Length: 293
Length: 342
Image 1: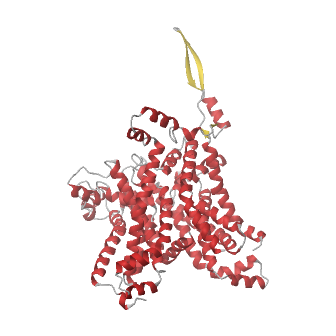
Image 2: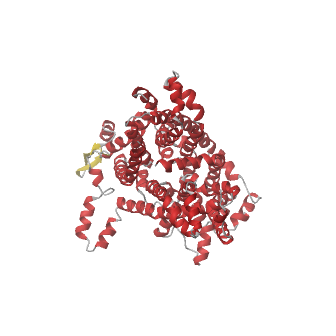
Image 3: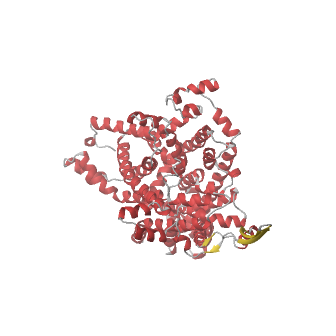
């Protein structure tokens, strides 16, 4: 609702559009550049002679007979076993989202409906847990995990990621459930439902907007994680992000820099697609955090 | 809700947090009190025609046995905290008595691994946060004025740097800034120096990392500011327009005061998140000149045959203390909010 007197002057609109355009270039161009470059050979993307080679693909033409090539993609997915990393990422992401939403909705619902003082202390503890750097937690996991012989496998990592994710999920869903009127489930309780029935039949049908937002954040955490996955998984079970890091570092793949470039594109593309669909939920989640601390 | 019902609803979530966040902190602390077992030496007498010599050798059998008995190593108390790689009390004392000027002392101090990492971590935190807040605010203001139909795609473009994981984000930038990449070549062209590279000096690497930090964190500040801008009350703004206030004056005296609480929230989250900076250092391959506290822990844990649990535990504890200091204002704020709510 824009009032007439609040019109923007032409000058302001011009400066503003220019600024926005410049900022969009800063944030988006690196991704476009990487996407374009992933279809070139290394001599082009990291060209000593002329950076324009990355656009025109001179060396790519010489080496492969065409100005763009999918060689890096094919090789990294087959020889580099990126398919395996993708599978692991899918397994981890799906499990983490499902489990943490299951635990989170139950816990947050209880927190939002209980009137006792300990809920406050639980939420404060969750806030402190949320602030812990993940690497400090990992340093606490490694030794016990080695002793129990559960290091390196996917289930351990899934449980760890679920736990790390709980504080944020709890806070997000807690502030969401606070906006769901209490009268809804209270009337169900008066009608003789148990708490669980009230949750199952009254709250569950209306909780999906909050759950989608919380799920989105859980997904991003699991999908993007590097600290936990790189230190808690063994090489065969690596997910995408540590796998990309491994392409850069190890001796056997040295020189196969383009694997990393193409894998970065393979890993980011699905994420961008998902965010495109769920942008509104993502923003509402970040805002809920701002309102509630 | 009765205690019993609450317990069963909350139990799974609480158990997960207790086991995998609470316990590891304790376990980390416990590890930090221990140190890797020393190798057991034994003296072997070797005799040859020219006489007998005693040699010291590592007793592999006894060492392995000791490792099996005490997998965590021997108890060391708070010793690890004071050693050269952490708080380095002895080295500081020595430097204090030996160095002739304050400058020399700080020089020695900042070359000790822990203090070097602390310096980088704090520099990174405090150099990234102010530009993030300012830029986030400006971008939010300007996205707020554009036509509705363009808002969705614009917001999507602006938040991209935040969505990708820091490792991928820093790699994407690194490949451009690299001496052989497009930005690197451009910078060389700009300064007319074909050997200029952002990796050539530690200052330049630090600046690159900080620029990356701003690029990565601004979208978050933008989103929060943008959402808060929608809640700015319209009445005072209209009143100000009638009173003849310019656009700048309206922003300065009505919008900014309204956003103060949100800005403090952004600053605190930003400081806390950047305090754990790790992935950009790996992505930019800047381990040589820029180490953070998290990187120190990562480095201790990375090698597969000899992990330094004690050292990593001690650094973790010190990092947690740092986080706790940064976290105090947030906790106080939350506590106040809760009290007013009741």
